[in-house]
Every structure is written in C-alpha cells, then in structure tokens.
Length: 428
Image (cartoon, rainbow, N blue to C red; front, side, top):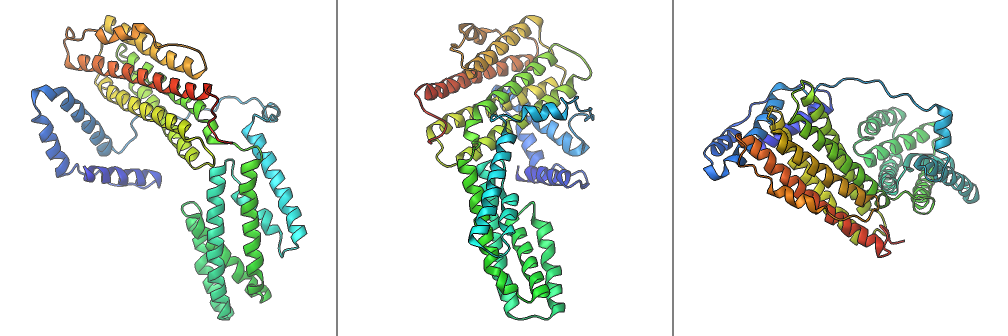
C-alpha cells in the first residue's frame, strides 16, 4: 500500500508543477492485495467487491494520466458593476471593509510611531506591516513570526560577513548567491526568504554607504515593531475569527454534500451520457468544501482564547461529514457502472435522504426541529427482492448515509445546546 501511496504522491506533485511523468506500474504489492480480495470468504464478498472497484478506478486514473472528468472553461457570470460592489463592501459586516480599516489604522500608527521614536529608515515599519498583515489573525501571526525569525538570521549573517570587510567583488558575488533564496523560498519557507532579502539589503548598504553595520539595529527594531503592530491590530481592531465562521462553513459543506447525494440518486434513475461528468464534478466540489471546513477548524484551534468545548463539538461534526463523504464516494463508484434502482426503492430513498438533509439544514439555521420519525421506517426498506448485488449494496449504503445524517443531526443539536447555554465560540 505504501508503494501505491508513493505513486499518488508523485502524480500529485507532477500535476502541481505541470510536469509529465510516465504511467506507473501497479506494483507487486497491489497485485497480491487483489488476489487476497478475490479469495475473500463468501460472507464478505460485497466488501471485497467494493474494495476491488476502488482500486480498479484509482488504477485507471493513474494509467490514463488524465482528469476524472472533462473540464470546460465557462465564462464568468456578469458582475454587479464596480460601483455596486464598492457599496456592498462599505459595511461593517464586510470582511474586506474591516481588513481595509485595520490595515489603514495600523499603517497610520506605524508611521506616527516611527516619527516619535526617530528610528533610522522608519519606513521599514510600514513596509513590514504591509507585508505581514493578512486578513485573519492566524495568517498574520505566522507571517510575522517567519518575518522576524528570517530577519534576525539575516542580520546575524550580515554582521559576520560585513565584519570581515570583504572586497567589493566578493560582496557582489555574495549578493548574487543570497538573492535567489528570496525568490526560491518566498512561497514555501518565508523565513528563509526573509533571511535572504535581509542579507541582500545589508550588503547593498555596505557597498553604497560603507555603513552596513550601522543599519543592523534599525532594521531589527523596525521589523519587530512592524510585526508587533500587525499582530496587535488583528487582535483588537475588528478581528475576523475563524471560530465564528465555522457554523457557516458547516452549512456550506452540508449543502455541497446534499447536492452530491442528489446527483448520485439521479444517476441511479437516469441514463444520460453526461451524468458521470456532472457526478465527478460535484464530488470534487464536496471534497473542496470539506477541506475548507478542516482548514478553518485547524485555524480556529490556533486562535487565542477559543472555546475548547465548542471546537470539540465542531470536531465531531467534521468527522461525521468526512465519513459521509466517504460513503458517498463508495456510492459514486457503483454509479459509474450504470446500475439502476427500481422506481419504488429509488423514490423512498430519495425522499428519505432529502428529509434528512433538510432536517440538519433547518437545525443549523436555528429552527427548533426534531429528527423525523418517518426516517426510522427507511431502515425497514427491503432489499432482498432486488435481483442485483449492486442494487442491494446501494440500498445498504444509502441506509448508512441516513444513519450518519442522524448522527450529524445530534452533533448539530449539541452545538445549539452549547449556544443556548450562553456560551460563545470564543472566550473573550
């Protein structure tokens, strides 16, 4: 399995960097695994069949070296016009408006502080603020920390180099060596990039003014002041905490999962040629929504004064939505084989799934709802009369989806009970 995972890693890296790699062999380990699946006991044939379908589908993607569905470039929807967009953002609820106010206030304070302290090259304070200031606290803190560490390392290297009084040709050679560090690591390791640009600036001052050591302390203090102001501004000036936005992201993730499940059920009743592409596209959108929920949850964990109890409830929801997505992916593999359900079973499952998702959505919106009693009857849907094993597998896994929706409903209810108790996503 590790060999199979390494193939996926190589494929994803090649896709990210727009490189071509040759189709990779499946490997002896995967072949042995398939042989073990083929020899599975009769009681576990359905599970073995599902595992084989997973590996066949994944192996096909690696062998073909092409996307899972056809990508088409669609024109952007018509906008509202720049004047209307500007008006919509001139409200305290707009994240762009709050970020703009925070940025402007921080720059003004940095400028005045530079004048009061009378530090050398005080514009470095505002330059640092403009670089490290991000729209949220976690990103700003991370960028400021990397900036401060990189600057400190760069200044130490600069002191060592300048104190040796190298000739001009050697200084120029060192500049040509350290400058690529900034461009090579600016996206992957900003601390290394900051160290490279700091050495570059100090050596430039040494060549132009022969006073590189005189700018070491001003550079250090200006950088630390700018980083500190950016972090404080994100703490106290109209902050945008990810913990307060988790509920909305849960709603969007649930909506994406509902649309994915609707596409799945439609594929079990329709024979349209483009159904598979639409299903694959909706599956990827669901994974994107789930990844966004995970990202915001991880950022909320790094925010100061967050509510641990609230995030524990969100963690439970995140795990259930992840399991839901895995179950739907299993159903998508069966849908690719053009398996159809009889109208009676299809209609019952479609109504039950729609009712389950609507109950969770209404609960997220603040409505006082209970889990519908009619969904308990769905578990009694008979599948022994279905002639095909895949049809019975669809009914069985759709029941699991409904059970997971019930678990998700309970998790959301505990989140609402936490809110009703007067608690907040944050401890302010």
